[in-house]
Length: 172
Image 1: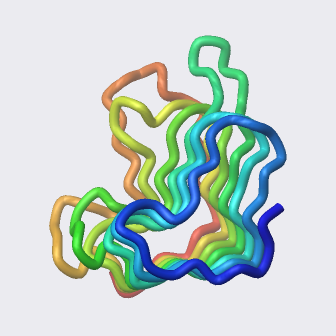
Image 2: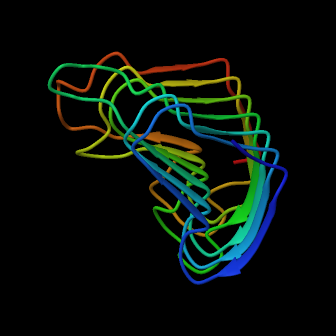
């Protein structure tokens, strides 16, 4: 667990977790990064909890993991985070939370003030059995079109089981 740290200033990502299990970033703050604040690639039960992410050039959190061939879930997550004023330099396809793989979750997040989307389940990589719930999203898509606050776009009929429920969207 990485807890209570303030990450500030860098040209790339602030934190990258690759593989492993049970790695948690909790109660941290991230600002002024050139790409994405936290990138989680693979592993299981890795996540970001109760953290603030703002003033980043790219996105907030990338969640990837799980096996689409076997539908084994990763259980990676972003919970109770405040993500705002992101996509400062990279205006499109840099969401607050990007989800791919199988069985990942974004819940109880406050997401606002960005040029494009809030939560993005990625085309051609989106995957299965993700849960997006209890998030509040507002003041998004301020500079772009052809997008939604929660953007699910899949052209593959095998991308099933994704659940989007109980989110509060306003002032989009």
